[in-house]
Amino acid sequence: AGDEQHCCRGRAAASGSTCSDPRQYSPFAGADALSYGTLVGGMATIFTTANILLSANLQEYGFRELTMLDFLPTGGLIVVAGIAYMLLVGRHLLPNRESSTRELAQYTPPPDLPDTYQLDERLWEVRVLPGSPLVGSSLYKSRIGAELGITVLEIQHGQHVVATPPPQTIIGTNALLLVLGREERVRQLETTGTEVCHTSHEIHTRATEALYPSEIIVAPRSPAIGRTLSEMRFRSTTGLLAVALWRGGRSYRTDVGKFRLQEGDALLVQGSAEQVQALANEPGYIVPDVSHLHRPDLRKGLWAAGIAALVIGLSTFGVLSTALAVLLGAAVLVLVGIMRMEELYSAVEWRIVFLIAGMTPLSVAIQETGLAERVGEAFVSLIAPYGALALVAGLYLFTMLIGQALGGQVTALVVGPFAITAATQANVNPIAVAVAVAIACSASFLTPVAHPVNLLMMNPGGYVPGDFFGWGVAWRWCRLWRCWLE
Image 1 (cartoon, rainbow, N blue to C red):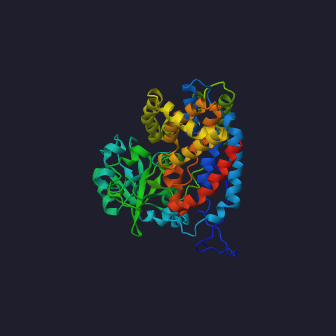
Image 2 (tube, rainbow, N blue to C red; image 1 turned 60 degrees about the vertical axis):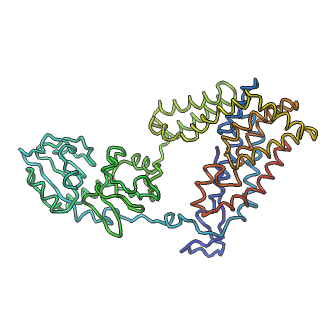
Image 3 (cartoon, one colour; image 1 turned 135 degrees about the vertical axis):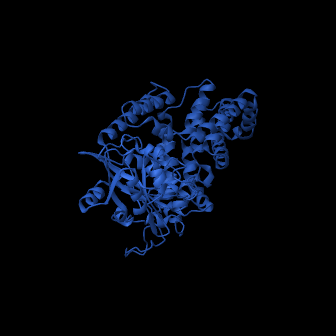
């Protein structure tokens, strides 16, 4: 589904803004446009769940599958009409309401995270002496972190330096460990054949230059709330090293893994940009500053664009079915290294997959029991006397109203058999009817529960359920008129 890019003017004055225009811009004013753009953009392509399901229904009745060319003429004009609607009408319906996430949006990361967390006060250098029981053991087996609550930031063997060492890193003779923790905890290492001293200016400079930390925040209703990092096996599951914790206006740099996390806790973590980005995609964490994570990769971008064009071409011209074309594209993404298998797996919305799998038997039962035929006959006898356009309009209205409660995916499974049967009995082109019903399934504008993207935009936009109804009514009639003409 394509996202409609739209800049919307907010009527609520942004806090602290210096703009001289009294009609100031809200950073969240375009949340409704993003929501509608996601839904409207999908009407011009086959690559939307409801569209694919309607295509499968047609094949079950012996008709050809739908392609991109079936949706592009009608859906493309709807996209143009949608942009015009949001520019001319929708932006004037924005509520004068503060976003519940405004404070987060205005968050400015500290200029120097290590200094903010006061890491230099707890930095120590530890030399592992010959004969120490630590020699030959891994960081994990040494229990330095588990028993003493201190963090090993770096291990140096001669000229070889390992920053953010993984738990399996072996400690050698005369190794230099750069650790973070309270002095009394670090001094306990001296009983294990080590020499401890406070970091010199040179070591401190090297350490701060080697640190590329990121700050993550425990989100409301996060599954991490009430659990410790040790219990969650945070290091092994994310690959990130938790360096410090910020709570109640102060920094904690010792026993970080033993704190039971609370909503709003900030963690200073060290790791690769990819690891931080993976954590940012998890629902339980917020990464306020992601600017340093997005490093454009031109090669991967060109590969991804080429694969997307290949998938669209194979599907549009009927070389492969839509499902096979998309599956092939996903496989190529993994084979050429654009995405890892784990990323591909996590990108799948499994709740939707299982919802469709659970509702598919109902759709089959509607067809095999004859219910679709009987309902189709009743629908035809009621509306067909008024003509084919009335039949299409009636199916469109019925579908979009049902979709406000069930959602587009389920609605396609339930209404699809009825609509195709009614079209067949009324001698109306079933492919045209299927396209109209598929477009109606994407008309999830009146309620926030009609589509997941509406729920996602409620909090950033500061919207309430009534806002969706106000924006959606006029737009629905515009779309119905466009489908009627088609």
